[in-house]
Image 1: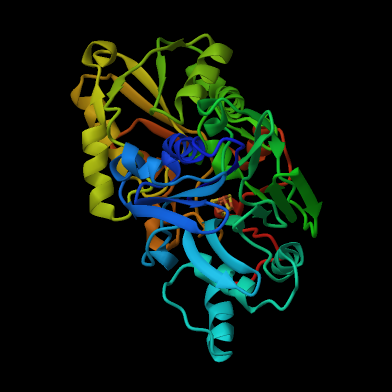
Image 2: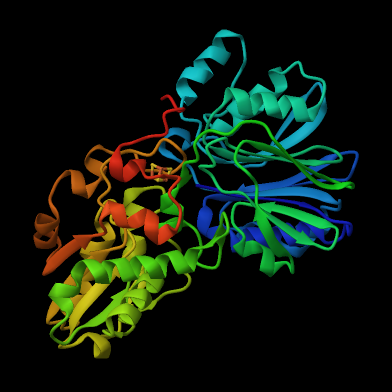
Length: 449
Ligand code: SF4
C-alpha cells in the first residue's frame, strides 16, 4: 500500500503546495518515505526523503519546485520490496525523461524481473516500480498512450501508477481495478489520487474513479481516459474494511457507510447473544469506530468511547518491523477507565492479522476493570497471503492459521471472538466484484505468481 497523487494546475505556484497537502491527507497509506516531482516544462525536479511528509518538506522546498505538472508519493514497502528507496523515480526513454510513482505489487514480479535480466536489463532496486519503468523504457511504441496501453496489456496487476513527463501527466489503473484511483477537479485543474479524501483538502471535488484497465492523460487540453483492457473486476475489499480513510469514496461508495453497514451485519449475526443484558459497544479507533456506531444504531446498545487515542502515533499495521508494531500499539491507546470499569464491553475491531493489537487491547481493558469483553471483527478470518500490494505474506504470520476463534479468545483473554461471515462482506460493501482472496484463497485468475 502506498499513496499516489498527480496534478495539473494552471497556477504554477500552487502545484508543490497542493501535492504537499494531498500527501499529508494520504499519509495513512505509507509512512516510510515521501517524494514530489514537478516539471518546469523543460526539466523535472525532485524532492524526496525518508520519513513522514511533514518531516521532509519545508516551505523553501516547495518554493524551489515551480511548475504546472507534478506527482507525489507516500511509501509503504511490502515484504518483496523492502529496499529500493523513495519515489517518484527518475527515468528516461525514447519519448523523453519521466518520473514515476506506484501503488501496488506486480504479482509475478520475480518471474518478470528474471525475464528482463535475461534480456540484459539492469536493476538498481527491488521494487515493482522499477520493473514497470523498465517496461516503459523497453517499449518501441512512438507515443506515450501506446506505450502505456501496451503495459496494461502485458501486466494484469496490481497497480495504480502515475507518470510525469515534461508536459503531461499519465495515469494507469490495473485491468482488475484492484488498486484504487480517484479523479479530482477544480475548475480547469485536474487531479489523480489513491483516495478521494485528499481532494477536499486542496479545494477540489471528487468527480469519480478511473475505470480499470484505462490510460489517463491530463494536460493543457484537460482530462482524457482511454479504456484498454478490462478483466472481471477484483477491487481490494480490505481497502473498504481497513486501509482507506472513512472520508474517502472508493468507486463511488463511501467508506464510512460501508463500515457502518458492517456494524449492522455484526449485530445481525450476534443479536441472540447480546439482546439481553447491559452492554456497551465501542470500536478500536479509528477504522472500527463507524462499525461500532453502525452496531449501536442497529441494536440500541449504547456506544461509548473506551480509548483515548494518541493522535501522533500512526497506524500499527503498516509499521515495517514487528517490534516497531508492538511498541506503537502500546503508545497508541490509553483506556478511559471511568467508561470501562464494571462494564460488559463489546469491542469491534476492523480486522485481526497478527493478533498483536487485540491482545494488548484486551489486557488494557481488563486492567481498567471490565466485567466482560466480547470481540467482534468487522471482516472474516485471514488465512491467505496477499500478492497485490498489501504486506500480508501468510503462514504463521496470520494468527487465525494457528487457532480457532474460541482459542483466540482464550489466548487474548477475551470472553468471545466473532468474525464477520464472508457472505456478509459484499452486501455491506454494496459491490460484488471484489478481491477477497486473503479471506477465501480465491485469487483473480488473471494473475500468476
Ligand atoms: S488479497 Fe486481500 S488485501 Fe490483497 S488485494 Fe485481495 S482483498 Fe486486498
